Length: 388
Image (tube, rainbow, N blue to C red; front, side, top):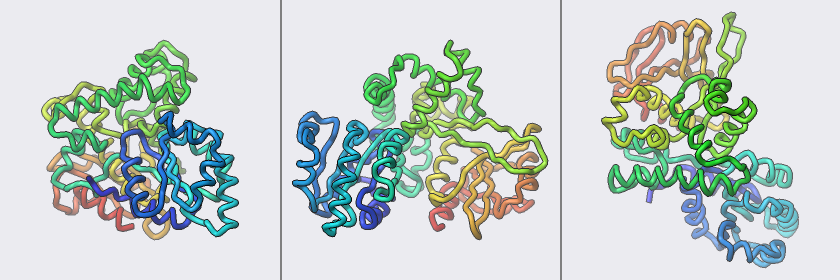
């Protein structure tokens, strides 16, 4: 089993807060992580998709009160929204009795709705953490290409061979469309949502053009916005917002859209192996999305992320505003062993004046490229961010 970097943080938050919510898409490893923490203390685990466990909560207050003093792990907690008011009362009563921390560990796969439900009831009593697919720091650095090709969902990455990895990803996508999303409430035909998801895959790393998507799907702009909100809510899509500042130039104002897991991107585009991916026009954008996601995961939680692009085409793939003495880091991404820094990147760096500027490439050596820009490998740059 791969040791998850977030485990120590979850343990720390449980020692600080009465309740901790662990967010993440299905099959990302939330249950495995929670159960491993549960073994360290007196705990009880309930899966709210299991009818037997749901039945135990028919009188939720009485049942949970019976297990006071234990760490109570509630999986897929968004399935029972009325539970949050009960949890609030139990937490407050527990605090009065001396149970000030570590009462509940809540797991959920739909972030916006769960955040809304829990924040209204548990404000000041709960901490939120996101478990992503596997990170660069959690694998052997020699397996970076495999992580890019297969993506970071543990069962895809750890599959015995490429065929089994592809099969798992296809089944994951189909299950999400036919079972998981309908369970969350939206009544969207699975085939329509699959077409939308696939369209986004073809547009990996492009500024969002909702009007074109709406026309292709024969729906209106509001419907496209609703579909996109859903995919973002499910932690499957990232909207990378544009940088906004007074730099005296016209800036692109549309967010860029990325599938957060490169393995799912490849499967939606029917790219099943390394050779097919390298020969496809999406290769550069796929690698770009993979690097961006890896760096955002490695950066401190306080970091603000964006991209920079002028109407004339000068661009920075990723800006990390780390705050304080660390300032802003500007990052260009190249899938090459001999990366060339574009004129547009140098122009953008002159506009932004970041504290550091890097071009991330597929090699390992770190060296200067001129103009204050350094070439650096992904593993090393992630390491610099983890140290912050």
